[in-house]
Image 1: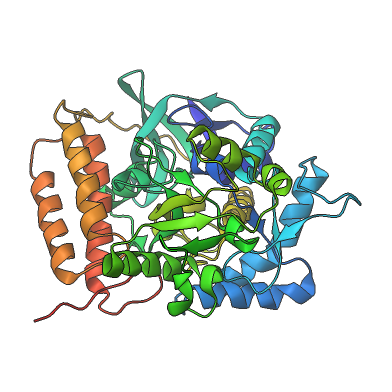
Image 2: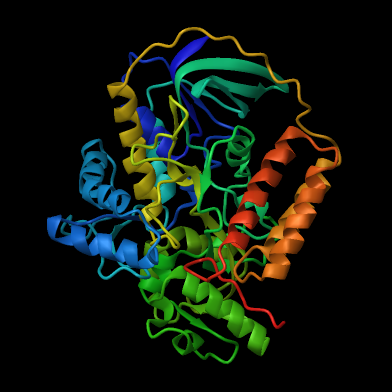
Length: 482
């Protein structure tokens, strides 16, 4: 069976792209697990945009400033200039953002934004609402509980994918393939990602000789409740701090001002490093305090966080909650142009968190991620429709590589510990070299293809981190005593 377009992943980026593919096109969306198990579903804070033409230069500046000089200015310009039309399109199709009593859109502010320009839905459930909305809008078939384990590439052109479906591999052919599979969360011991976000496609691209970019740029969210036993930890959105939540130590001191004059509103990398450093120096636990919130307002503005924390035994907003940074977002990814196209491989695209469009540079500005997925998802489809051509038939052998061995699970857990200890918020050359040697050793063992994907992605992160000697953005190298 052959399709016009295959989309790998059913998060916001993949579904928004699907929405722009006409119904008369033969399209297949491939989803690894249940549809809600994607990072889009867990996005709490909202979606950023340039509110009007006057705000475009300011939004661009905020994005570039957060990116610490490593953003691609053309990509940032595309992101910002496209943002209002994307939001208007969602509203016109029936998506409901939160509004005030007069029916005006409610904008909020988050760290490193110079003004209130972030829209939200369902209080703190923007991603969940948007994902459900896009699923309802989707006109194309979806293959669930199937994972892509190979890209069918010959002579610099992509002809489809191999899927592992009910423990059997088979090839599915297409004129175009869009990768929208998300980030790398499961590489780390503590993360906020959906459990199935495991860096498969990035590792597969390494196997295929496709370039990854900015892989050292891994963003850690500063305010996460890590006391639960699951690998996926409870994210406490940046919007909480934007609206008055404070970070304090055991004695109630708001220590962030010792690190940055913006305090709680400094960018994520600064807040994460400050918490890490302060905890190391003092040995004290860090807390997120909600004492500035009225009870009724808190329950309405952050209903899901309120419910989840209550279930965990916290009497919020009265009671403060212990927090720690955790892995949150992969800034680096599969290198693309401003249309989501992957250089040197025709008919292959990457969008959303799996891609590196270079709009985020060295540090993603809060709530630019949902926007990026939508903007470049639409642009990828426009590029596909513009270049439309039907490929000649090429038949590929189905891979017979073993997908996993019984021992792989323990090795996955070891990898997560290695990455958390050596390749997280604060890095050292010795720690990175230790991680590299351990990852290389695991790659030389008898392992399945799926674990190989993870290890290859992890190795790219480590190699990129070792190659960048100076600290910048989310990449912080601590100097060691000689």
